[in-house]
Amino acid sequence: MLAELWRITSFRLTVLYGGLFALAVVGLLGLIYWQTARYQNQQVDQILRSQAHVFSTATPGQLDQNIAYEIARDVRHISYFGVYAPDGRALVGNLARVPRGLTVNGKPQALQTEGSADLFPQALEVRALGQKLDNGNVLVVARDVALLEQIRQSLLRGCFLIAGVILLLGVLGGVFYSLPAVRHIREIDRAAKRIADGDYSQRLPLGRRNRELDALAQIVNAMLDETERLMGEVKTASDNIAHDLRTPLTRLRASIYRTVQSLEDASPHHVALNHALTQTDLLLTRFRALSRISEIESKRRRAGVSPTPLEPILRKLVGLYEPLAAQGDVRLLLDIEATPTAACDGELLFEAVGNLIDNAIKFTPPGGTIGVSLCSVEQGAVIAVSDSGPGIAPDQRKSVLQRFYRADEARNVPGSGLGLSLVDAIARLHDFGFVIDESAEGGTRARLLCWRKHIPG
Image (cartoon, rainbow, N blue to C red; front, side, top):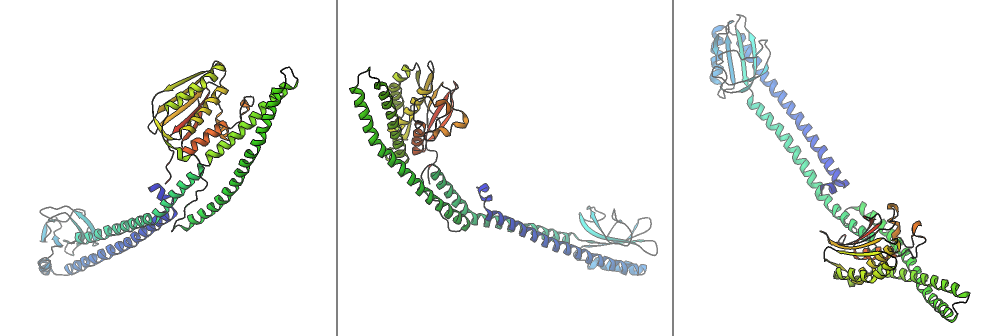
C-alpha cells in the first residue's frame, strides 16, 4: 500500500510540503530556543556581575553582612557565595571551597557540578564568576540555572513534538487524499487486464477527484471505442468472407469429388483432381478453424463453464489419437498424477487438448514419444502435452499463437497454422494460462494452467 501511495503525486507533494513546513517550524522554534537561552544567560550573567561588583566594593565587615543577607533572602536556594583566603580556606558564604574548573578571571562561565556535602547539595548546572579582591582573597558568586535549562529543554522538546505532529498530519492528509486515487488506479488496472484478455467492451473507469487520471482515461476510452469499432469491422468482414466462401468451396469440393468418382483410376486427370480435392479440403479446414476461433473469442460458450473432471477427457483423447500416433511410429503415453476438476467447458477443453496432441503427432519424428500428463498444484490442475520433436525457438513461442503463423521448420508439415491459435483462444475464454516451453526431451511442452489468472472486480 505504501509503495502504491508513494507513486501518487498528490501524496508525495503532501508529504514533501508537510516535511518542509515541519522543518520551518523546527527552525523557527529553534531560533526562539537559541534566543531565549542567550537572553537567560545574559540576564544571569548580569546578576552575577552586579553581585560581584557590590561585594568587591564593600568593606570586609560589610562583605560578610552582604553575603549573609543574600543567603538569607534566597528562599529558592539558587544562589551560592563564597570568599576564600589565598590558601583556599573558606572565610564566609555557603560554598565550602572553590568549584573545580572555575577560572578566576572576573567573567561568568558555565559549570557542570557534581553533588557533594561540602559544596552543592546535588548535581547542578550553574553559572559562576570568580574574581580576586583587592586584599588577595577570592570571591565566588554562582547561580543555579538548572530550572532555566529545564525550561529550555521543554521548549526544545516542544519544537520536535510540534514538527512531528505536523509531519504526521501531513502524511495522514496525504493518505486520505490519495487513497481514492489508489483505488481508482486499481480499478483501471483491473479494467486494463480484462481488455488485454480480449474483453474489448470494457472501458477505463472515471473517478471523482483525480482529474488528471480522468482526462487520461477519457482519451484511452475514446481510443478503445475507435479500436473496437475497427476491429469489429475487420472481424465482421473476416467472418463474412469465411462464411460466404465456405458454401461455394463446399460445392466445388462436391463437384471435384463426383468428377473423381466418375473417372477411372488410370485416367491422367485422376491424380490432378485428387490433389485439387486435397487442397479444397485444406481450405475448408482453415475456414472452419477461423469460424471456430471467432465463435470462441466472441464468448458465446461462456455459459457452458462448470466443474468438470479432467481425467476422463484425457483418457478419451489418448484413446482417440493412439491409432494416429501408432501410424506415425510415435508412442503416446498418459500420466495421471491426480484427478482434479476444473471450472471449464468440457467440450472446449477436449478440443484444445486434442489440438495440442494432434500438433505433437505432426512434429514428432518416427520413434519419438508424446507425453500427456495431468497433475495438481496449489492453484489448480495442470495439463501438459510434451513431445520429442524439434521444439519451438524461444523467440517464436508467442508468434506461433498468431493466426496462420508457421515457423520455417513447419512449412512442409501439413496444417493451417491455426491449431495453437484455437488453443490460446479457448484458454483466454476460461482465463486459463497457456505456456509453451521446452520439454525434457528437447522438444515442445505445452501446458494449460486450469485456474483463473485473475478474478475481474
